[in-house]
Length: 473
Ligand SMILES: [Fe+2]
Image (cartoon, rainbow, N blue to C red; front, side, top):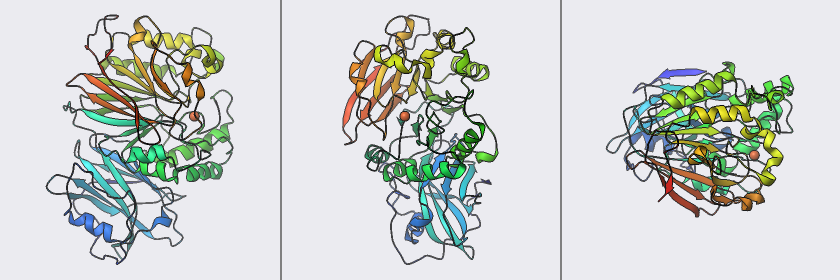
């Protein structure tokens, strides 16, 4: 792993410019709201020849806080070149080079470069570069991200989400290619089934699936368009796996490949839990859960049902109850809302199949205002109340996606009043969290980029159990 403190000047020189002007589709493009056409460093980087073949699966920013981020890529390089990284902090009047320096490659060519000292809320562009004789001579994958806003800020934020992206799905993930064009998003959430690796058994097998999936135009563009928060679900290992029955060697290979292919501090070599909290000022706290890796199906029906480990559940309850952010968003790979009828078939795979723990969580957070669940897995999009009636009918879960997978036709069975909206179309969801207006906008976009559902939910922010109601404007 490479690690650096940001410096204005690092080891690389950008003085040696190449003559080729091939422009990558998503690299270092400035957003409309940040006019900065004269940034010298940007012009120099764009003037370098573009080495597409060395970066077949693009790049990604992740693990983002208000002063830190990790930049990820995988380099395919037979020439055994040296590689570097240039990071530019954008500003209205003047951009600055926030970092330029070397990066190190893991076995397999993976780069997970940890940055520190970022400016809260600032927007960044980055680009990996090939280095010869201390000079950048070619550019590779690159993208953009935003540092989390300052802990005292209540700035309104927009962010996106989806789930379920399979290489077996035809096309180039057009839904996500369109999402990548939305340059106002602070970050993007992928709620699991990022790849479908069910046939893989070995590390090389899992790596091949990631390569097939991440090289699709739409997914690569998405990864390079905003910082990503991700969590795994079942298909990163195999369908409906659980820790009690999974083959250990297969799980170990899948877990390593998952860590290799995302932006994590420490990469795969540093074992870590997959659930984590990311704070975006006073606007929102994001609680990314691991609802897959800790479940114990043998406990399902009992009073000690374990869908999350005891530690993860307590961490979640404590975090939600102590959070002072206006919105508490829980990224939850498999839904927590009650789904009946035909949906009972797969009940054992979700919260509903572990009723004692589900009830414990919902009771513990019943007086916490403005908790939102953002979920995936069903291959349909919907806006659901957690229960058809009662106190938990006040809490909303949004099922995001599929971003690129077979649609689920039984979305048509989901009707009001429990379900405000349901769709079988491929989709991504835009959330507009406004702590000043005390509102959350929810907009679903389909493969053509059309908004197929748009509603703003406003909360009175009362904290007494049972007295809060959400209403659509
Ligand atoms: Fe899926």
